[in-house]
Length: 231
Image (cartoon, rainbow, N blue to C red; front, side, top):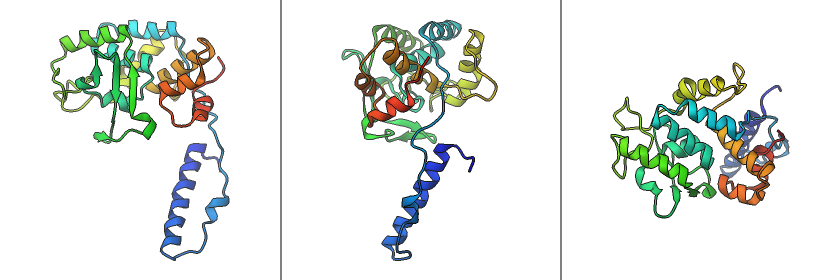
């Protein structure tokens, strides 16, 4: 009681799996968790940025090309932070105009995509491509298997830290340009993902199925429940 729905759902999933294993090993005869209901969707409302605010954030970060290009990558593609951090230069398919998404950075190493649907490609808009080329010419780590967004403090051996970047740069930049981010409110790369999907569906009037493909969600309902909300 009182727990957020993702926590309740996770507990239910773990307990259900535990009973399934128990049944297989003949320790129990039934799975009582099957009848436990959990909320089907979140009440979470993401802080949304309109395009002008996103451009203002980018302008605030403009003196640092690494930071500028990192935020532009998320804002223009709606990639997850873990997917962006896992990118190497050979994932940027310049001639094809797209970005290959085949892994994510989790717990200090490369991992599998979040879902099978996540293993796909993202569009490389010419403006994003130009910024990436500028950064490619400046970065000290430009080999095929070097991180696109490396930690300069760690000599490019790992990507930069998403949480540190959000706390030190992205969140302050958003507040500086007038985005209302209250103390304790969730705000990070996922807000750019939410903002793009919301704008595409509610303002651009794109097909939700098209947006589902961009977000690479396996379930259409996930897009409608979590990534669209009224302005």
